[in-house]
Length: 114
Image (cartoon, rainbow, N blue to C red; front, side, top):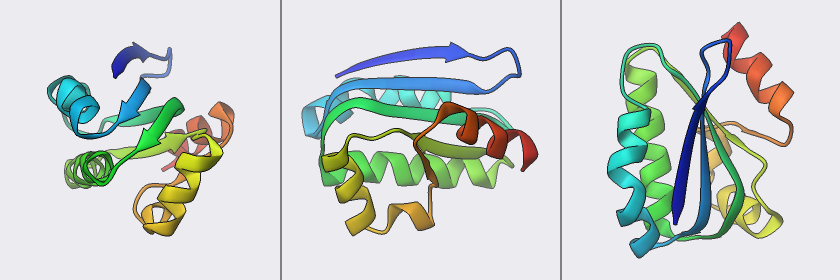
């Protein structure tokens, strides 16, 4: 699992994950992921377009981080998961906790207006 961080001109953080978000992959990126989502009123887009497997421990990381971000006045959204990963997210009810968008512009607009 690889993690890439960038920041857009408008201050939105973009975290791109690449690989399997299983126990090994989650362990490899958890500390960096939480660090990138720290601070008050952060706005984070988590790009899942290169994640090809999502296990329950990966879901846990996403949910706990999103809740932590929300408690500090921020917001996190997910971007463009592949169909298999999207199905896992849907089956586990994640969209009720973390919105999922298929286009960067849509995710960006929601974060800037909320």
